[in-house]
Image (cartoon, rainbow, N blue to C red; front, side, top):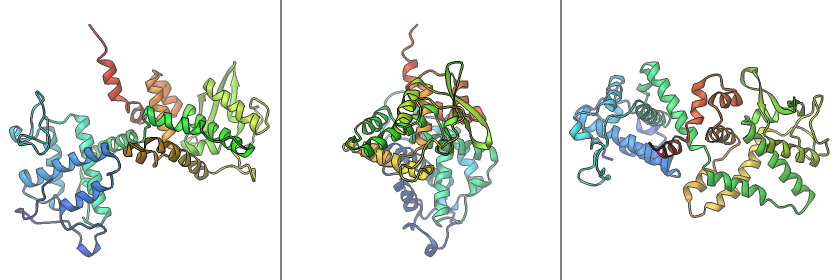
Length: 373
């Protein structure tokens, strides 16, 4: 990256240095502080570095301003620029042939104009950067907030989609979680109890795609049989009632867990008792406690990637809600219809479901290329 000190226009939205919460005296240093927050995630870091480099270069060469001096109109110009970087010969390398790497003489920041999706992602990244600088008291305000609502909401959508993709487990990471679960000791009745309960928690969150709050607030009467099929009835966001098909594998785990806690094999319609309770007090478990159990397991799984620090860092951030993300994407991978996935997750609109089910677009694209004439 190149800093843009000493440029022609020096109007600025910088906060007085003594109020700044990061060690940054220049825009470049401030951007580096922001990037440093993502140093443990190589893929995110590369993406964010690419977008911030493009922005700083545009500030210096096209706008002749510092990043701190950009106004609402400047950001509008930049977002338009992303759709058609001009002059094309200076900014774009074209799509054919080998692209030069950064540091090489013929490197250029764009292959060509950004697609609508790529542009929305770029806007989301830039908005994240400016928001960080405002939160750190480096800048006074975020001009992007003033830009028309459509751009902002589109940026927010793509930023959320990017965040969700970062929280979906890769197959080897998910396998490590399951292997760590099965490796839990069974040397005492207490250890067996803990293992059986944790298996029930993981399988329920995964196969039902539940929010953790929905699981801890449910009673055994949420499991109901109808015409030989088991369903899970749940009250979700907005007090909306939904029902989710219960996978055969999950039903086996349900029966095992109920046997462990000395209940009849199958749930009864009048069993109005909490599903998850403390072994010691009999009181319902809290969402926080369940997350502690899951994080402990994820830390064990992370040890399997001692030679892959990016995966270790990712698993250390694991939480219960990741299993809802994983359930959605794995349902998509399994070929379950989009409308069924939306019903299973109980989303109010298609756009929310698409945040999850297109997280595997890369694999889908690879598969599509298997098609032959």
